[in-house]
Image 1 (cartoon, rainbow, N blue to C red):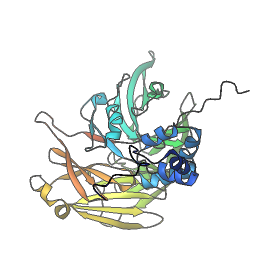
Image 2: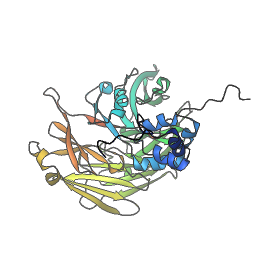
Image 3: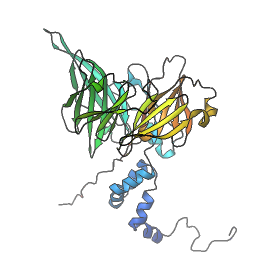
Image 4: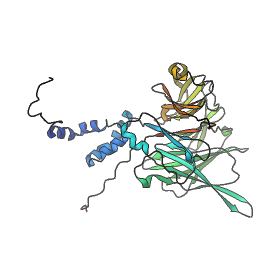
Length: 401
């Protein structure tokens, strides 16, 4: 009770006796229950540095699956790429952010020494591209250009792992491509990259170039021709789900299976079209399908294709959910700028501002207002917290034989 003097055994003691602490920490079940609640991957890595036993628990695959379910990857902020070159893209943190992530946020404004155009963000990494032009033959005036992609890891503590330059991918000119995109996929300790192009010719073809960790050159993975490739849309962008690439044409979604090398098509839901800025695709977390997000007249519809049919899984009425915020915004022409993975969030353009819509919480907030000098908003690239964490490497003991 208040005012009473604590027993002598408790005076001047701010924590339980060490015996009680040891009893808890020596119990593996209790220890994992404590570690799984640290909340952030950065805190998980610090916990893993305590000792080898803690590292063993923190890096266990079953434990990591549970940790990710309790603490989904966090949106740190977004890069805004405007004009050319895009290497001047600026980072805007999503606020508020917890103090534990302050050091992580400070590393987002990385230095792009190699320059280039920003082409995407994936799992804490930023992808940029630059072009090098050359003359292959002076006699025949054969021109060529080389695409050089760089993978920046601004969230990585290790400076040597902060940027990786991929081998160049060379093309001869003219290149009649009307759609091209770089995809990345993490597999175990390495990554695979796929550069997909669709030729704008009398007989449209899709070409897939592949680069895996450790390769010193790109390989042509496959070339397929199909009338399904007519009029691919430059926006919205395609998505890679498991081993399938989904991208849009005027009246359907084309599915490219990288394993079977088969092209197929998915018809759009009734009443949905791929008008510029109204529709985008998003990955499903378990790799079983794809989301389609469509906006029309302040109604945001979220469709799921999982199997053979479309299922309308959610509808958000912006005029009802966010009426107070929309009072002073021009809502006649709302566009989708970017959709987060797993149907978690959407970035919307409204007039001269960008808004962030949290799909699960049904909240909308303004995140950027254009200046009077800016003529258009540009492209938004969200930066997510890296998953899975990079754990410390255990060095063998000096006296080990």
